[in-house]
Image 1 (cartoon, chains in turn cyan, brown):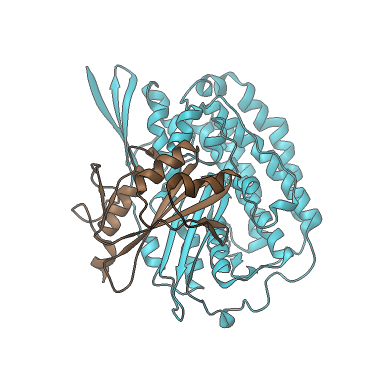
Image 2: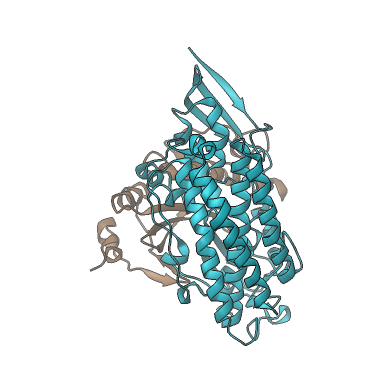
Length: 363
Length: 135
C-alpha cells in the first residue's frame, strides 16, 4: 500500500520553498510530483516597467548566487539589439567575474551537500573557503552578492590588481586538491551517500532537456562556454568535465572538476587581461537609444545554460519583453526521474544534487 | 549539406534560415508546431524554451520556440491569434513547465494536454493573465 509524504514547501531538507509530494511504498519512492511557484515574483513582467539601467539592477536580483550571470546575459542581449561590442578588457573582466561566481556557487553547493550527507565538518570547511571567494568578489566589485559589474557595452569597474585575485585562486586550488576533492571522492561517508543514488540516465537527461553539471554528470557534454563561446571564452583553454554515472557522485565530481577548470580559466584570464577601456564608446546612459528589435543571449551559469530573450520597441524607455529561462527551470523536473526507486531518506540529497535555485525558478 | 540546411526541407518550409544575433530563425508560415517538435526530436536537438510575447494592439501572441542543435541556437516564431496552439508536451517532456507557465501568464490554451494547478501560485484560477490584471 502506498502513501504520500509531502516534503516542503518548508522542510529542514530544503533550502528554499518548493514542494515534493513523494509517493512511497515502505521506504521506497515510487513516484513524485513537484510544485514550484510559492514565491513567484513576476520579475519578467516587472522588467517591462524598468528602463535600460533599472532593468539591469532588477534582473540581478533574479538570483542571489548567480546574480552576475543574469546581468551578463541581459546586457549581451541589449548589446545585440544596440549592436554594441564591449572592448576586450571588459570581455575578460566578464569572464573573471563569471568564473569567480562559479567558484563561489560550486563551493557553496559542496558545503550544502556536505551538510545533507551529515558531514558537517565539510560544510564548515566549504563555507570558510567560499568566504575567501566572496572576499575577492567584494574587493573587485564592492559587493558580496549583487555585484553591479555589468552594464551595456562593458563593465562598471576595473580590476586594478589582478595579482591579488591570483593569490586567492592559488589558495583555493590548494584546498580543493589537498582536502575537499579527496574527502568527497574517497571518504566512506561521502561515497555511501552518493554512489549509485539518484541516477539520471543520459536518455532521461536529453528527454528532460537538463543543462549544466546535471547534464554533464549524465554523459551529455554540453557547455555554452565551449559550444557557443561568449565574452572572452574563445581565447581561453579549458576542459569540460563529463561523467557518465548520472548519480549524485557524478554530479559532485563534475562540480569538483569544474572548480579546477574555473581556476585554470582565471589564471589565464588574469594573465592575459588586455589593457584598454572597460566599456565601449557611445554606451553611456545618455547615449543609449534602442531601435525596435529582439535579441537572445545564452551563458553558462554555475547550474547550466541561462537564456535571455529581450525585445524593445523604438523610442520606448522600457523593454517590451524580457524572458528568462534559468537552468533550474530546466533541471528541476528531472528530480522526479532521480527519486523514483530511491529510499525516502535519500531524497533531500538527491534533490540538492542538481544545485536547485528556487529563486531563479520563481523569477 | 549540414544538418541545419536540411531542416527547412524536412519541415516542408520554403523559406531559408535568417541568422540574427546568434540565433538561426526559420519563418514558420503554415508549419504545425507538432511537426516541428517531431523533427527536432529526430535530430536530437535539445529543447530550450518558448518565449511568449503579447503583441501590442491586438489579441495575437508571438510564440518563439527555441532548440539547441550542436551549440547552434534555433528559433521558430509562431503567431497565435486565438490563444490556442497545439501542445508539444507529449513529444517533448522538457516543454511541460513552460507550457504551463504560458498558460497561466498569457491564458494560452495548449491543445491536447491537461494542466496541474497552479504553477505560478498566483491568483485563484487557471489561465490567469497577470499582465491584464495589472493593467
